Image (tube, rainbow, N blue to C red; front, side, top):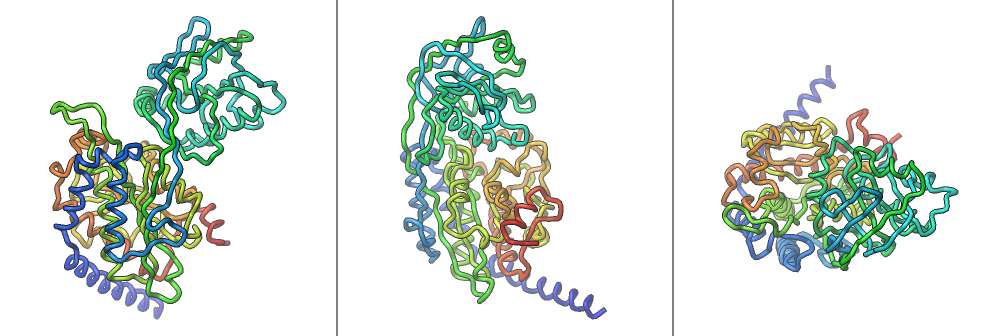
Length: 490
C-alpha cells in the first residue's frame, strides 16, 4: 500500500514538473527565429543541401555558428563544431554495358555500376553464392568477375545490402578477382525504385580501404545470368567507360551541453537529425529544379537546433549531445561514421531521439517510429500530449522505416533510438506530393503545426534527460541483446 501511494505521489509530482516545463518552453520558444532559420536552410541559395555540392558548406557553417551562439560547447576530439568525414563521390559511367550470350545489360535499365573504376574487355564470370568469405574459399578467382546474390541470408535490409557490397568487393579483390556483379533478385523491392535511386551520383565513406574494382548490380529476378553460367564457362563482354570517382570532405555538426546532476551528467541523450537533402533534380511543372527539403529534413534540423538553444540556457540533469548528420540521403553515412568513430563513448549515450520524415498528412498527431519499443514511450507521448497532439506508432511497418533512418546507426549498437516524425497515418498522395519533390518548401508548411512539433520535441528530450530511470529496449526487441552487451546489463 505504501509503495502504491509513493508511486502515485511520484507520478503526480512528475506531472506537475512536466506541466511547468511545458509552460517554460511555451514562454521561451522563439517562433520567429525558428522560422527564419528554417527559411534560410530551405532557400535556393543552398541548392537543396546536397553534400556533394559546394553549397553544403553554407548549411553546416550556419548550423555550427548557431550552436556556438546558443552557448553549446564543441565536443572534445572534434574539429571545432565539426566531425570531418572522408567521402568518395561516385558518378555513373558515361557508358555501362555487359553482354553475356544473347543478354545485354545496360546502365540505368537493368544494370547499375555502383562503385569502382572503368573496365572494358572480355572476362570469365564465376558464380560464387553470396560472395562471402566461405563462398570464395578454395576457388581460383584470379582475373575473373564474380557473380553473387545481393545481400546475405540474414542481412537483407537496404542499408545492409550496401555495407555488404563493400565487404564483398574487398574479399573479391583479395582473392584476385577484377569485378563483382550482384544479382538483385529481391521481389519485394522493385527494381525501378532501386534504379531511380542509384542511377545517379553516390557517396561512400572513404576509409582508404575501398576497392577500385567495378561493383555492379543487375536485375536478375528470373535468374537469367545465373542460368547462363550453369551451362558452362561463360565469358562476358564489359564496356564501363567514363566512370568518375572524386574525394569529398563531409562534416557532421556536433555540440554538447553539460547536465546539472552530479551523477546523471555522465550520461548523454543524443538529439539528432540530418541536415542534408537531395539537391537539384528534375524540373517540376513550374520549372523548379531545386529540392529545398523543408519537411525532409530542415524541420528536423531546426528542431534540434532549438533544443540546443533551449537546453544551453535551461540545462537538464543529463548531458545533451547535439548532432546534425550529413549524407543521410546518401545511405545514412554521417550517422554511421559517428557510430563507428564516436567522439562520446557509445555506452555513455543512453538514448537517441532522432528526427527524420517524408512529410505529414495529419496535424493532430506526431508519428514516432519505434514507439512501443523502449521504456521511454510514456515520456515521449506525454510531451506530445502536452501540446494538444497525440503520439502514434509507425502506421506502415511494412516499409521498414525504423531501419531506414539515422536512428538505426545507433540502434544496431544497442542504443534505444526512435525517430520523432511529423504526423502521418499512411504513405498517401499528400506525402508523395512533397517527398523528394521541388514543392517541399516553407510556404507549403502548416507552421502552427510545425511549431507545436518543435516544442513537443524539446519537452520529450527534457523528460528523458531528467527522468532518473535510464530508458531501455522493451523485452524481446531485436536490439535488446546488443543493448545489454553495450551497457553491461546481465
